[in-house]
Image 1 (cartoon, rainbow, N blue to C red):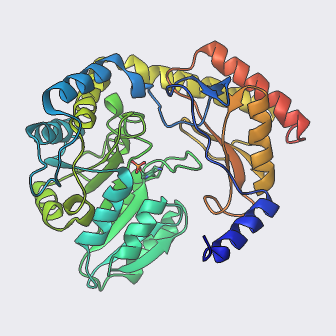
Image 2: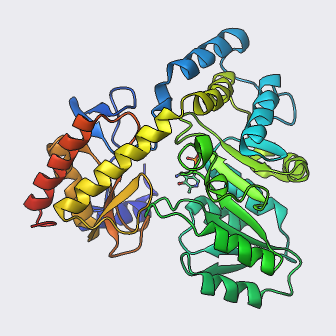
Length: 392
Ligand code: PMP
């Protein structure tokens, strides 16, 4: 069909630059090893931190929910699509997060969008770290509030932004808890101190910290002992939790407001019973199987040390997200392709997901990887890195 030539030209340019990518379907379940293009490879690109995508207890909960309640809800939450299990789960999640209330959205992306776009007006301002996730950026684009971007984790820059915005009614400082591309942790204690000094609210996106940091995976707020001092905790149920969805953990006031004004919550159908039941069971898993998080961190340390010993630049990561920096966009994709040849699936991440010149292969180990998996993966990195002259 004619009419899309203007898009086709851009795609051709991407092909010339070497940045055009096809989607890569898995032919097996998610896990430490997956099948892609008929080949078994070590998975280092998923966010399945704890291996919960196929946890037996969560699968059983999902199966039972389907049998009892079917596969869908047939309505948005605010009309006829709230099941008792949605509310039970939100209560359990709030208790887990040590907050007054919690509200579940369809995804982490729509949670950020829904919160940021609905709670602020042109009398307010949002102050955001320059490397915050795309869903925060899009949420900010949708709000009528003023915007200030501060330099990445730079507390002088944040303080400057707070000083310059004293005339606004409400100031909301928003940060990722763990930054998704570099794997560094936000300096939350300093952010909270500054926010308290200048009377601002704080919102943390714990997408990569839920199930990873804090006691039993309660997130960055709990990790830093800041329970009760961060106004809004947002997170996803699709990474360490292994299912789908996003949550806001905060006050009953914010929850009630979002039920009335949070557009993705209002206008999009509620989660199927299997999703909610599996998420509900995940809290029991987090509480009763702390060894999963211990294993995740053990694996993280082993793999990071291995990469460093081989001479790779792993940036400023402090978490299971470990970027292997290469710089050039096309080289990142070639490195990823070569790793696949060597038996490892680790995606190249290039512009526009990261800045030009900061392309990388991003790795995430999980609790499911065995020592053997990780040793084999390090050997693949050594082979591919030497072949492409990324290391000597
Ligand atoms: N915030 C951050 C920091 C993320 O990395 C992601 C996932 N890419 C999201 C939000 C969105 O979460 P979800 O995949 O549940 O939409």
